[in-house]
Length: 274
Image 1: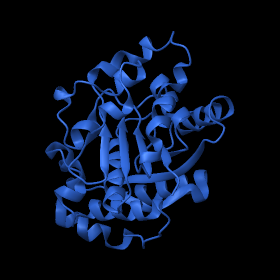
Image 2: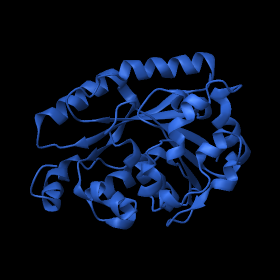
Image 3: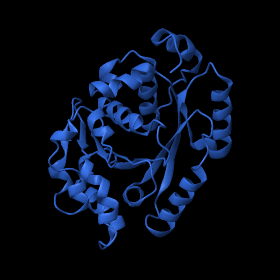
């Protein structure tokens, strides 16, 4: 299959962006797809969440953007076969300012990926929660975008700005760019709010919305603290099943939605709302 490079992007924080990057890439790797996860967020949560001590990282995606290292040379294996990571580091915090005066600054990541692209089936880019130069690099380098949206108040707030940014990048830097899909996350079907948000998002994005909805799950929130994707932390949890279903959907298979049993399983994980 042809390599798909997908940015996971939303300028809002706390929308399950990194959770999705870690767990979707993990399940695709477990489905025997060679997968690379690029951590482009200075917070380095994808790096630590996949089991890499970010304090021990000597060369990161920061060095790649500055041209001091190749992407191939910074890539590290993970606990899952077929899944590698290009780690981030705190150095990335200053990258947006440092890259401003560099020639072709929007294409730095794209050029790095092109060299190793044919080694993978999927490449995921975990973007920072902003629409700055790092995110522009990701949108220029990728084929498509997955937009995670939390099932909370103000879920659609700021999304028009994100869509405008995607369209601007498409018009000026990457004419093949498209929205791969919109992922509803942090769903709690015990509330009317979740159902209302799902309806609103489907009105806004139509058939771009994934059938799979990611529920709130204590196991999903615990797993990064142990440096594990949920597939290794608790493969029987409701969150694990949801991301497994999402991975199958991304590769073109359409599992049955798990909405009907979400409430029962959620209550078995924790008696209190998260």
